[in-house]
Image (cartoon, rainbow, N blue to C red; front, side, top):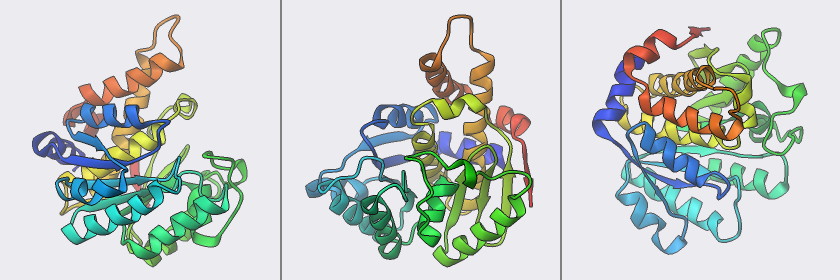
Length: 273
């Protein structure tokens, strides 16, 4: 399953439109290139519909939203849906401010997303209006643990059914749900949380996998999440004396570039709940 999804990305080389935040745009573009997809970053209102029309998928990331990019998000999202393209929402920092939360909520009400990917605090902000988030990081009190995992899965399944989309909740334990099935993924390394943009990179990676695997969307999301987590593990193993976080960031991208289907199948650690 995972091998087929990865190889589909390599074969189809999907063209992904990203309306993303300026903090991580370069790393997002490099992550897409590493997985053999093609990125384009465009958030000017006068061209977003035209750009979206020639792409295979759209990632909307609200990390540095502003009065100019918000209308672009809605226009591109609606155009992508009209074209039958996959669309993903990354509600970065939802719950941290009224603007972020309301924008994410309004996007969800007007655009039928294929996938919403965020940490548990961001997803709670969309589901119940929680303001228990710390910037772009999940609150410690919100963390998904082995002790509360079943409760969190029930909560997230209800949210996935309500939104009629796949929900990816990332953290120490990653959960991928579609309202019926749930994959619990254990790949990853703690140091990934110290690298700015790994979540943004993952969102774009998921969009590429969705675009290349339209008939098995849940499996595509699982493959992308496993691939990113495994890349974090492999990258850490390749760290040398004197290497730091900046090197680690590059090694994660390198690990995606060098990953093949056999490696992914062998290294993926997940279970169906």
